[in-house]
Length: 194
Image (spheres, rainbow, N blue to C red):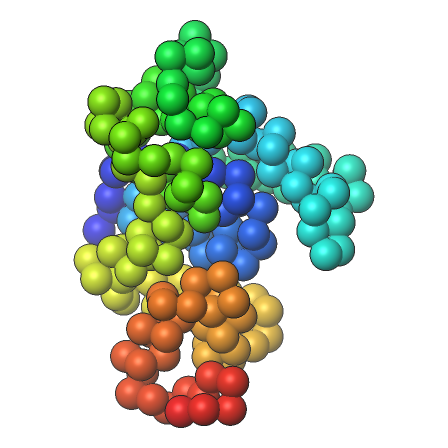
């Protein structure tokens, strides 16, 4: 299966290392969606990585991350949307995200900041904002095998058990994590409870 449905990944998703890792792996073959972003979104990721993380990135590491991401997904970049920004009515700081979605012909923005994308400001553009865990649950319902295999890859790369990866993801994606842990038949423990 190779899906060609594009989504905009907001900076708050890309700056969350665990969530970003899973999302970008799901965009690799056999991909479940096509990632999209803009230079403005990637600039915001860099600012977050360097100033707002518990362990901030040095600039060279933030630049390296961007180089790797843009090199791996060169088709993800949306350009030429700036003229739309002043016409938008969602939160001012995130108008560039909606503008990129409109310009890129993308109908879904994946973001933790749902309040910045009220339905009243999105409806006219036929764009929807969705929480990262809700979109992951949709992908999981469409193709659980691919989602599980990508989580298994993360576990192997980090030298962890899959349930540990899911527990870590549960800090940002509690419903998604709980659903997958439950689907494993309760064999994995979360926070000392079955």
